[in-house]
Length: 429
Image 1: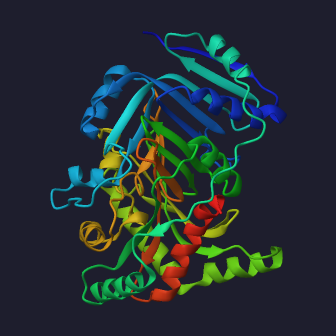
Image 2: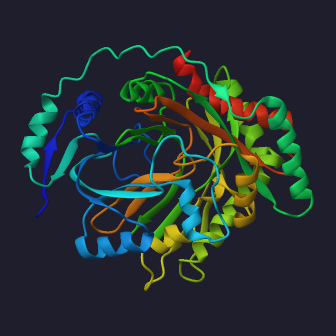
């Protein structure tokens, strides 16, 4: 079936209402993915927001090769996710023993019935649809009638999968692994969870996105599994033959005023520990991209960039390369997944240590959601600062952590992990 596409003008001041209309309408579908830039724009931005609704075709992909083959044949939109545990399919030495709680497949993409995109200028919405005309979709959106007042979220108390004493002890053990030469840096995370939680995923996303608006925010439903994401980090972007990754390593809490913010940002920029973490991950990304990109094309476009978000300041680097002429576009993912900022280095060894010391299956956390366009361009985020919910079992969880180096101080690592967790927990307090 041929996809129909049409563009409609919108008033910039009506953009926030339109987003609510899009999300309200999406609730009737068992699968959708909403991607929101929260008006953060840079030279890599394509859209202010995107919404993919309904599965015209559920494709039971078991590998990235099958994703590539499907796209080569159909040349249409694909939206979906790659869970962290897909690593086991990419490397035979890896496994995941902990039980999953939310229910996302390791690899899942769908061909959407409807794709809505809003341009970065907030002046136009483009609707691309199968089986229904774009005009019908546009009219439906206009009459979606979202609730003016969001429902209150319940007060919830989260349990920690690893308590403070055990967490501090684990940091010391990981430092010993580094001292013994097992690895240079390892990303260690802890799960916060709440059982029998009765929540509205849509209201959770609204609350999270209001308190922590981020450039790679996402709201995703796949059956009874939901993800509400406030990620500040891009994993991988393809534009023509150019592949770009923007790893984050280095976090500092916001100050009470602008003067304190300036001081904190300067301290973060000069931090030996944060620079060490960041440069190691940037170097790891360089090596990952080199496996799928032309020799000599890898560039570090920015190193130690300091960016400000509502809750924290982040140190972000940008690395790019040119995809090999004869390489399938999925090679860029295959040779860089999972993203180095969520593993450490060397990758295979630290992923084995992650499995040994973490006490919960990561599932979609530390994986990615995003899209592949008909032209085979794509953009994927890093799933952090996210809440996960299974509506059937009423299990609500998140995972937070940080990069551990030999210079890491256990107490400080605990505080950084709790700072990130606080930004998620506080919407229920």
